[in-house]
Image: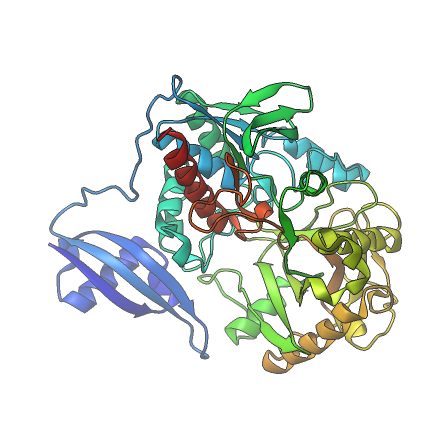
Length: 520
């Protein structure tokens, strides 16, 4: 017999399968010996009151063993003789598009400007150790895209865009912990995600697809009003319809499209800072306990949002037990982001704290309206570079000092390994952003006592929350509005935000490409 139960348990009651079996016994009246296995289907933490509970939906196998796998497996065919399709970019949109193309019988040729996910780690280490940024291999570019070494969070609200569970099952098939199928806020971890990415790549190659690293698209091959392929930096032509999934930082691609008068538009974005607290402080605040989270609860998270002067101010990409990392992709830039290992075990918590920005908010960039917010990104990143000491040292200010417009005489310890330099962000960053952040911080401090504190540090700047460009495409067919054979895809094209939504958009674009291509 199989029973599905909804239980509200104390954290220690969910700590192991034996304790869960005992909870099932109490609920069903069955003896412990009858409970063969327990599988958690959904799990979430309720920390709204002083006593913390775990809401659990589980499946209990009573007097029978489970015979179904924890996740669904897709069988992939050999497509070595199939029609070729070019996928530009090996981030989540590109990789999941390529997997879907294989399912549909097409042969994906994936080109990625950066290095494979393992070799890329050496270039990331140089950013922290020697302050050297490889423009083609960094936290934004390389196999896995900006998400590979940027936490691996899988939480998304984009259920209307497609089957989120299918993406999670595919990640499990390629090596992710099946716990992501149950957790309310699933997370793979920066230390585990590279192995999953490698497995996806190897799957593509086994099926007859190609994955080429350190290969940069320089132009599209356009005949009439149709894209027929790409030309790489070596001058090689690769033929096939093109799924363009270049990520949110491929500014050279945006400039190329604009120069070629291929339709794009400026898209609203959010920019601000990265805010870092001691994780123990966040645990005490969120779990309402002086002793912190204790042995049975994970590192606490938070999510804040408010409106200030007609613009949203909110936390973004919250990383409990994580690190602040340098995410520049070129010279004269300082950009920060956050990540967490799978155990979320560091002594710090960080999140982006950002302000909603629309193209009309900065009219000084109006002469080039399509690239206006891209130029604003560049301006802020260069200012952070200049105010951070003209290397990857980041400008920073204690949180309460920032709110009170005071210089910080010193800074707290930080996870940001290139180092911090005390700098008055309230003076040199745009008042449009800083004034709203100050009021947002005051509000968050009022609703969450202890959050506004000089134990926390504001680090500049967080500018790569999403793409500042939308590459225009038809809603239903995903095809570019004026060019057949071109399928703008994922976060870089302006149609997703985060690993799961980018993966969903990749699959959708692959299906649209296949429907048009195979019917010819």
